[in-house]
Image (tube, rainbow, N blue to C red; front, side, top):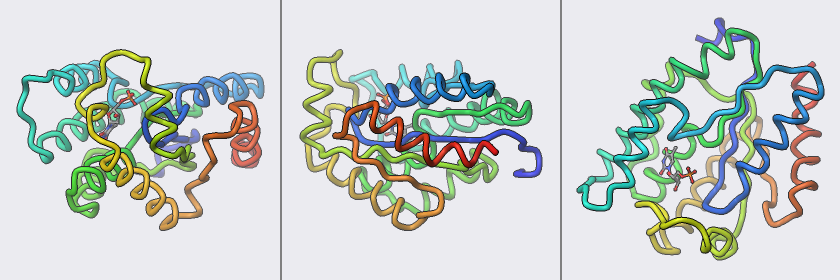
Length: 209
Ligand code: TMP
């Protein structure tokens, strides 16, 4: 599947309140200034099916086993890859995606306790083996991230989980990054947003050549 790709695929990952969307927008602006066409997208809501999945997941009355939750995220991902991400890469664009398969490994694997290998397998089926060229992990202490989100809209199913769940997610992300240091850039997300953007850009610029 990699043979069909000409563009560059960048994903942003991190726990609640890690500042992913701020960085996604800042990177898009820098890339466009450098003359690149950018598709900025996100999961779970990056395509109509993903939006429906997000709505389902936020229905408080709906009973959802961890496996059903995983498969809903993964179904949204399959459609998102087919409908948005792969076509943009084939057009030679830079795709910036706010959350991707690593979110399922961190949240449904490490957070909910499903086997991380099973989650990876589900991701492989959904993405047909599409792997990001660069994944930026915005690492933030759980208390800091949750405090940043405190004033926002009512928390969804996952936002309602306690600090211990989010600690497992954070440790899961750090384990993923340690496993694949060539793909992951881990950034301290307590730094000033502009400093974080500069750090990511230093990594990203050589990949544009
Ligand atoms: P967000 O739109 O604020 O990033 O919220 C999405 C929520 O869904 C966030 O709490 C992380 C969670 N999530 C998963 O648990 N698994 C996934 O695969 C994805 C994409 C998101």
